[in-house]
Image 1 (cartoon, one colour):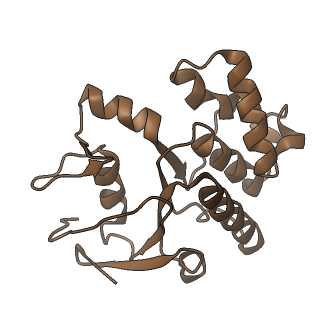
Image 2 (cartoon, rainbow, N blue to C red):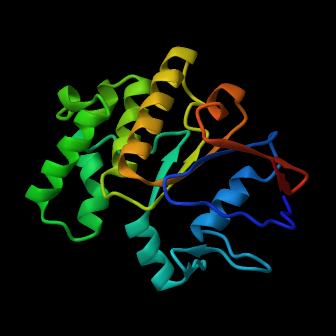
Length: 202
């Protein structure tokens, strides 16, 4: 989907939902913000640094400053819950003992402390997504990008996950973009933008 005329600014601590029908360009927008896809024109800045695809500096910035939450969880089944949450810290060179301690603190905050030693194969969908949220936030990113985080969950689990996501984003002071087609999910954000035919509007 071609995106055009986008002029979008997100402040620290702000939680914005972007709504749109399938094929409206929501995932493309998210990939552009993260620097995962190149923009044909204009620029995307994170803390004043231009995000570019296939750029080492952007990769380091993305690893350090962005947390991702996906619809499909992307939790690794061969690692325990705590080991999954430790991954972003280990990629940043945090010593394993320290990474484990920080992971356990974040899992506790996300209501997953008691399941830290479990295999992801033993978890429900809601528990998997709370694990993914803990992983996305454990390194205290400046920006959280959540792509349809309740898309694979039932209504009750979805509400619980959104409550955890909002609470943790606000407590950490991170800016966040929630991509969703659900009015219920969008209602948890501070403001809602709509993407239609490649154009973003209130």
